[in-house]
Length: 133
Ligand SMILES: [Zn+2]
Image (cartoon, rainbow, N blue to C red; front, side, top):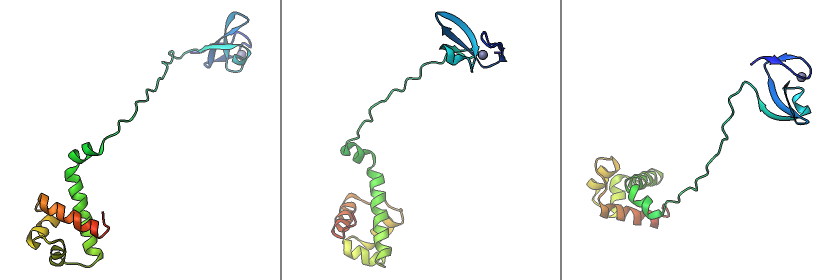
């Protein structure tokens, strides 16, 4: 809103209601420092912004495991693939090292098959042994 400053007479749309010696004046931005600013005019009273800090819930490892078991398996397969390429192993060679059927391993690596539990365990054991986990 546009108005004139009670103190200097300037016309401005940057007005403040201030209190000086117990009296209220509408003043411009330059005169507002002479008193105590009660509010800026032409603005809806700003709602106090209260930021609620919620403590982050810590997810226990057990919950994580349940929810992300599949993802964990994917990670495992990914690591296995990395291991394979780094060591220049074929699926057959890898299958022999891990001691699973190469046909199963091939399908697992191609995402044709969700690794059965026993295969997952074998892969885990193997990767741990190779310091890959
Ligand atoms: Zn003024």
